[in-house]
Image (tube, rainbow, N blue to C red; front, side, top):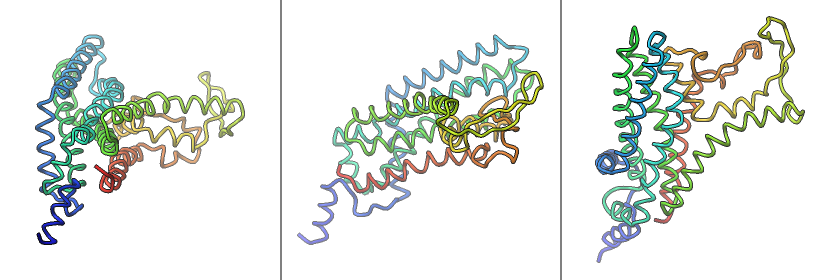
Length: 319
């Protein structure tokens, strides 16, 4: 047997291709297969029916409860609060077994014995699961649009499409986290625990950080920033806010970044949605990391960094 043949056999046996570089055709093939497999699964249809029903019920209720005051931006403001919670759940569940499941059953070795690198598999899985999530969101948003479009005086289609685009981007951020964690865990049990940990981190721990820091500031353990503000009665009063670093911690939460990013493209103001700040607390203007455009950078960070780390670890780990 020649040395070339031996090398190829060894690569197949270890579950890797001769090259670890990305190949467009290979990524496309894996994306297509993963998309087709996912939309035939009961998990996809179960999550989709849940989201379709939720959108229809919420849109119908909002249109019925506030028929005279309902606007497109008002609907987006209300629905975004629900999407902030539901989209991560759907993305984490869809990405849960993306690679860990195949690793557990051993089918990942069959996939890697074909001319696919590990990077091809990871990127293809991310794109395939994101396409599945986008399909579900697109149908759900169409259902919501049909339920609301006839209830508002003037439906803003561009604002609604911008809202959908930002929601897909938000879903992509959580899908990147989910697929990345799935690629570095050896079983679906470990992957499931990691997904649960991510959800707890961002929706219990992270939401409690600002309250905890505020309490520490009021008790003197953290130095706040003093400024002169106006009370509801119009009187000037000395006030204190959290330091900039504490506000930055709050801003890098994907959910907060999502809601702030919506204001960039949908026409909503910070008063309708997202994080608002008292202008008097920042006499020199808002720092760049508290501005809405930076929230888009944060979302892109949660898309790029997890998958970049996973590409490094998955490409070098044992299958």
